[in-house]
Image (cartoon, rainbow, N blue to C red):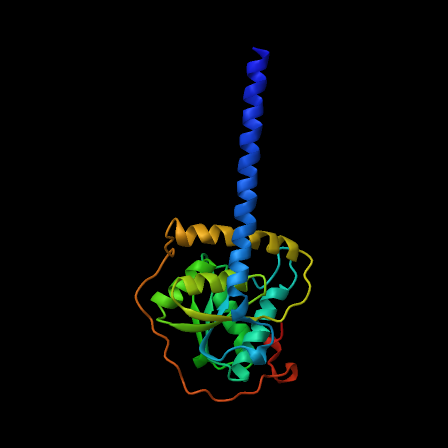
Length: 240
């Protein structure tokens, strides 16, 4: 009886070890695949980013959970405004979460970019960008895009570009200006897991966006160069 129990325990440990090894290989291999296959599409300098008619800006909270200004949000806004100012993009699609009336990422992005001098006619809001996948699927199917420049942080761009190109979009990435954040390691760790989950979304589960709706093609306007406003030119209520 004792020897039988030991054999079962040994088999169980061997099975668990094999599963752990397989999970590790999938995790590491998936991340290497996503990062390696998209590296050539990413530029770190704004003036070297490939020009495109439309830039897609991914939403995130204006504030951190501790009540501080979110450096990732403001980095995306600064970079997007510079792209528009330098005419690297003609239009910006602001895609984010708006699940409740109290939380509206696209509206916060619109206000920030408009304060930075980007004209309203160069801004379109997507209120159903609940995830990176949803944003890119809607960019293709709702906003009728075939090509775009993606604006977000360097650790997020590989997954965003991988999804976009898997969906048939000709996308490249422009790294948003970055500054160190205290909890950034958590975001990066979560991103490692999200990259592996993305492979399942695309190749196994055939994921569909949460909400699509009718087509809303973006109408491009003639771009008029603008000068980003300085703080002394803003109205008092516009200063954050």
